[in-house]
Length: 109
Image (cartoon, rainbow, N blue to C red):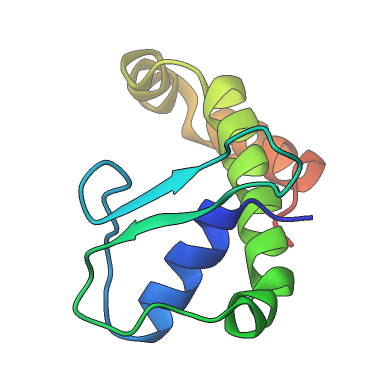
């Protein structure tokens, strides 16, 4: 199940808001009372979504979260950009092959 923050971000994006600040625009809370995480404050210039609207973004949010894991894994595997530039200078074909193998091993959804 996708995080509420990811579903809120997807909802906002679909409604023309490209960036949500979860410290000022929208605040999510979990009072540990068994009801789970919910929206405590909504300060965006679009209507606050209903639970049904947020649920409709479950698949897109799951894909986004999975792709974020892939991006993080790739970033680590790619290594330092300075070292990559040195690798490109020395042997671009070897660098291309290494990057392709990283991408192939960590496909996006």
